[in-house]
Structures are given as C-alpha cells and as structure tokens.
Image (cartoon, helix red, strand yellow):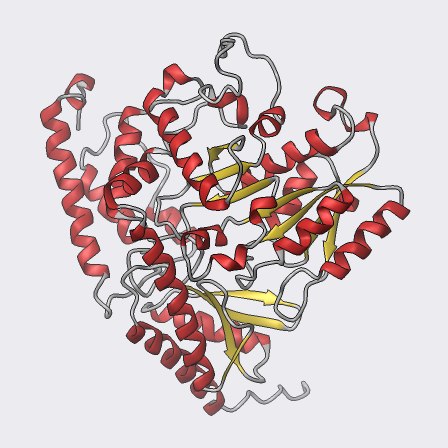
Length: 487
C-alpha cells in the first residue's frame, strides 16, 4: 500500500518492481514453452472471470502488484506457448514487448511532432521501408494505426474523398450519388463494417463471389460493377484480400488492378495478414500487383511478431491519404511551408489524436535484429502450414485449400458441423492446444494459424493426433436413442 504518491515515482521503487515483473514474465515464458504445458487457454466462463476480477477497489489499495499481475497472467491465453495455434495475433518478440514498456513509460502522444519527435521520425522510417517492400512510388506515405479494422476504415475514407466525384468531407453523402464498394464474400468483416460506417449502407457493400480456392472471381467482379451501374449506384472502390481471414487466400491483385484501372476505381488491398509475405523471396509472388494499389493495410502484429496493435496504412499517393481528414485544428497544427505533406503532425492523417508510440517496437527491432530475421520467420510459418496440411491429408482429414500463407483449415471427412465444433471444444478443454474454427457455406472447419517461432513438426503431429483421437472417440460412442413417447 502506498499512501504517498511521490514514493511510487522513486527510481528505486520502479527498479525493484520492474525486476520483479520481468522475473515473473521470464518464469512464465519458460513454463509455457514446455510441450506438456496446459492450459494454453485457461478455462472459465465470462461470469467466473468477473468473480475472479471483482469490481472492488478500496480507498487504500491492496499493495501487492506482483501478485495481482500473476493472477492476470494465469487467467490469460498464453500466446508464448508453441501450441497456441489460434487467432491471427503474433507471439511478440520479447524485445519488442520491452519497447512497448518504454513507449508506455514515455507516453508521447504523437498527434503533433512536438509530442512525439523520436517516434514520429521512426514512424516515417518504418512506413518508408514497408512502402518500398510493397513497390510503392516515392510519393507514397501513410500512418501507423491501431489495427486492421481501423486501417481499412482509414483507407476507405481516403477512397471516398478521392473517388466519390464530389467533396464528401464538406458536403456530406446526401449531396452526391449512392456509392458502393466491392469486396470478396470471404473478406474480413471489418471491411463491410467500415463501408457502413462511412455511410454506404447495406446496399453499398457488394459481395463478389469467390472460386474453389476462396479467391475473388474477376469475372464476377466485372459483372457486379456493371450491375451496380445499371442500378444507378456509383462504384467507388474494390477491396482485394491478401491473406483472407477465413482461409488465408490471396485474391488475384494484378487482375483486380486491371479492372480498377479500366473502371477508374480505387484499389485497396487488405493485407493485414498476408502483406508480410512481401518480405519473403519465396512467397512474395502471391502479392503480384500490390504495387498498383491505391492503399494497403499491413498488420505487423501478425507475421512480424510485433505486440498488438501495430498496423500500417500505406497510400500510393500520400496527399490522397491526408485528404481523408482535411480539417483545421489550429490549436494543434501549425502551418509550415517546408512540410508539404504534413507528415510530422501525424494527427492530421489519422482518426487517432493521442496515439501511443507504436513505431518504437518495429523500428528498434528492425535496426537491432535486421530484416533477415523477419524473412526467415515468414518462410518458416508458411513452411509449417504446408507441413500441417500434408500431415492432415496423410491422416485422411479433409483440407479446405492448399495453404498460401500460415493458415490451415481442415476437418474430418463426412462429419457434421456440430461434431466438428465438438472436436474443437474437446481439444481446447484438454488445454494442450488452442485452435479455432471457421464457418463456411459447406459447414465448420478447424483452423490453425502457425505464428510461433518455436512451434515444431512434433507439435503439428500432436495436434493431428489429438484431432484424429477425438474423431475415433466420437465414432466409438453410439448415438443416444431418441426419447420415447410420454405415457
């Protein structure tokens, strides 16, 4: 307990507390890396967890910070366990996590340059490097923002301002034609949500059919654009996926770019998951044509091992990106003739005003460890996915599509969706693995995302064994007899 606020700011107190917290994390890291560790996702209902973390705060406090943090760690999903094969969130580099500690300690806001001088310069450097990897021209630019959902919204706002045919920002949507965007049926839900947020409504989000590999069909896109024009809607943009959430599919970006060029539409590539394949000589061909995109979203907290959230929104033309938020805020932003794209006052180009120093972790990591570290990691994740798909087929499991990145979807052949969901629940309840599921028109599939640097072939064998064992257990149990009629 500390009644004296000044004592909490004493360097010695911070030193002792910091060492204790880091020691707690180090011990947990060693524990969860054991293949026998369980549970990767701790059990407990929302109600039970609310009881574990009650909304009771005394006037004087409990004092034991390390104990409280230990409880929080024990009740959290362990992404540092090599058998975490669940959602598309990276196991963060420990050094990058320490950068986040520094970011939180410094707490530089970043709306204007003077509130984030170092992080603003680092952000410009990181964005420049990412844009170079994407093949964007020298006039490109962008921002770092809090996640792919906000990134997609930012990109569509820029598309609306650039391609609506009138100044939506100042005149409002009611003064112009009905706009629409085109997205693959498998696109992340955030794209359709963003389109609705910017005022396009249900009719303004037009789904485009995908092929058997879950890729956008360009013939269906052409038909959808023509049909929209017949219905007196004004096509605005096409969103292509690079590593879709459902199955990790990559739309044919180059072909989609041809259509956008012909139809004068904004091309946005949602590369939140798969843009990191640009770092791989082996896999970057799956993103051919991305250099023609008007905007790109790239999550570094997925395949680049950065702590969440750390998303880049890249624009082929930096000025068009900035135009999405063209408004005056004289109390914040000073006008400077030598700063033509206003890059240093980041608040001009993003929804966020006070923004954490999210450039610190990627910049320091790239400088300290080099770019090859990330290239090797991307290649390994993709190789593990290919291996997992092969192991699944070898055990007579059905694989949705040949993996293009680090996402694999599979299931037992001929098993109803309810049983597939039951297998997933049994595996998660067992605790040694955390996997998720995805629902497609043809039913439920098990889905694994390979992101952990320490996941091995033995871990892949073990998850396939667990699935097959669960299937055999289910098939051994006879179905329940239907209840007879009541007497």
